[in-house]
Length: 131
Image (tube, rainbow, N blue to C red; front, top):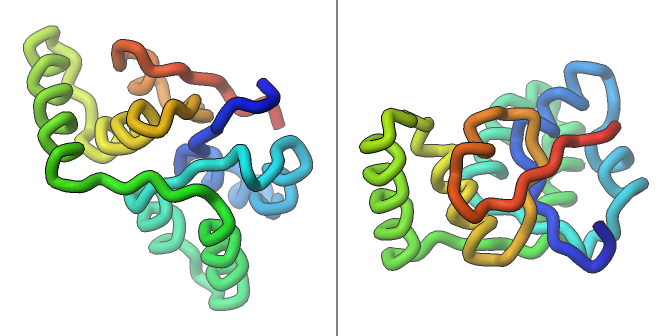
């Protein structure tokens, strides 16, 4: 997986924290910071749930060293279009997951996740966390 960008889904951060692990340390033990991508949805989902200020500040700093994939007006058109297409197939996926997938698709990144929704999104490269 070297030289490939990875967008780490919020599920990975949350799962690691529930296990008592430091997501920053675990993720950086496997990937260079230059290989990591994030987006506003993942950052918001993760940081909103952090109880302690120290942990929140640490994770906020970690997000700042990742490449940021933003969703502008044109990208949101891709989000609703993808949601509409998936809905027609009977695959109603949370809008947050579709937005995260769109960020990954726009940046050419893989999505690292344990969330099965992402496997239904066409052309999205998905990997499961192995830590």
